[in-house]
Image 1 (cartoon, rainbow, N blue to C red):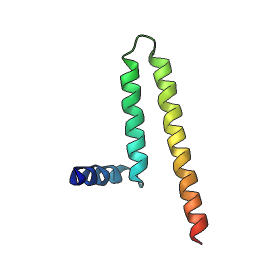
Image 2 (cartoon, rainbow, N blue to C red; image 1 turned 90 degrees about the vertical axis):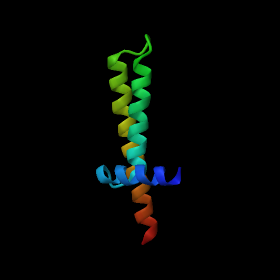
Image 3 (spheres, rainbow, N blue to C red; image 1 turned 120 degrees about the horizontal axis):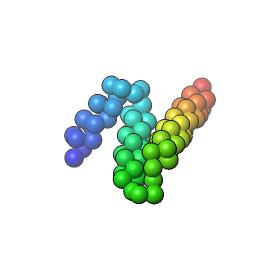
Image 4 (cartoon, helix red, strand yellow; image 1 turned 120 degrees about the vertical axis):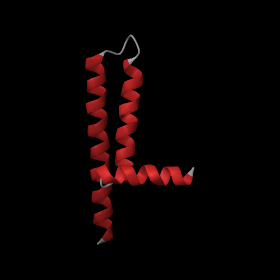
Length: 73
């Protein structure tokens, strides 16, 4: 299992500089896809959830990176 997770992080690292960001974006995408199959969750709500979730993940990543570089000096 550890090899599989390492493999997934390496693949995610090809597309994103931070593997945890890639995993978060993929999780948000999967949740939006599952929610889209519910009758009460239409396309516009899924798009809003997807855009808001990805924006929140990016913001969290930027804040975490800024704090890390701030305290590294």
